[in-house]
Amino acid sequence: MPEPSIKTKKPPYKESIGAQYYNFNKPDEGNDFDVTKYEETTIKEETVKSVTITESAESTPIMASGKVYDTKSQIPYIDIEVEKLATDADDLARMRGDLVDEGGLIQTTTTPTKPFFAYGKTVELSGGHYRYDWYPKCQLIENTDETKTREESFEEQNDTLTIRAYAFDEKGKIIKNSVDTSASNFPKGLTEEKFFTKPIITTEDLLKASTPSKATIQVTVPSGETSLNLGEKTVQDLCENLSIEGDNVTGSLKHINNWTEFSKTDNSGNFLPLYFEEAKGQAKGTVKCEIKGTGVKLKKPVAVDEKDGLIVFQVHNKDNTIEVTSEGKETRTLVLKDLELKQA
Image 1 (cartoon, rainbow, N blue to C red):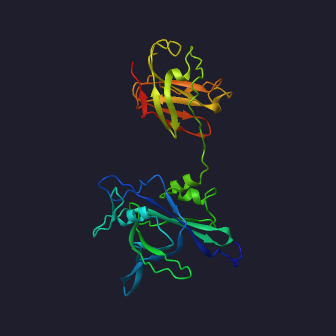
Image 2 (image 1 turned 60 degrees about the horizontal axis):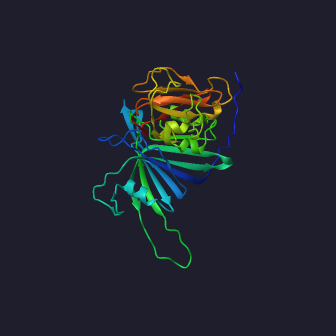
Image 3 (image 1 turned 90 degrees about the vertical axis):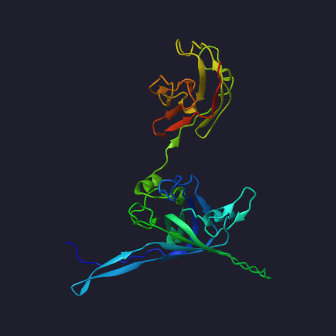
């Protein structure tokens, strides 16, 4: 048995408030909040002067046999008072539930419908440490708007927003998720940007945020005069104004008749050429693609040609998608819904 001992700790202390983050919840129609649905973009602001947290803690002693048997404690909500140097006009109107028309008129109503949003903040600690906090279910309760006359010397005129955070889980017990870089179990590889890219709701979300991202498979449209090595056809014979933005493929696919070099049987229709530079000159099967959806007869992945990095698919319907895989890289799914499929 080890001998009793004393261990002196020197925890980091707070030095400053850092950036704040927010992301609006976007529930389905008929619901006011859905913890699984937030907007794609998280907003970051570096205009914060101070943040004050007030917990609405309630403790009720449970008496039995003339003494305290237990104490029941709960926190119905947490109020977050944020003093800010400036606030984005569009986002403030949205938080307040104001009505904004197409002409830019902002109207404050007596019975606003205020949306829920996730609120996050960074606390800067000594020794280069930080604490990151997410409150996934929040509403703006009130905001102050005091304006003074300009004096000879500059004086800050700040706004104060009071945000109320509620429990966001199904059982109504969790209000906040946070991590501290000085903690012994702080996730390795986690950064401020990764933590705040989207609201952290579950342990799985935190694991995903801290796991290094896999490289993305690069796919492009081959130049128009590129030979497809399938007869005499070139890329420009198959398509017009073809482009790839993100995973969305746009442009027009011409209708080709009796392309026997492509196939002896199913050889008429619309054909999509793609180019994968990382497959060129590599081992066979470095990059594989599989087309899925209505009309697709091919039911297995096809290797991109390792000689020229090219592959051509017959597109049967705009609901078709192309799943691209390569070992050690993030799987991509190309969406074809915006393609124009020209008819004969």
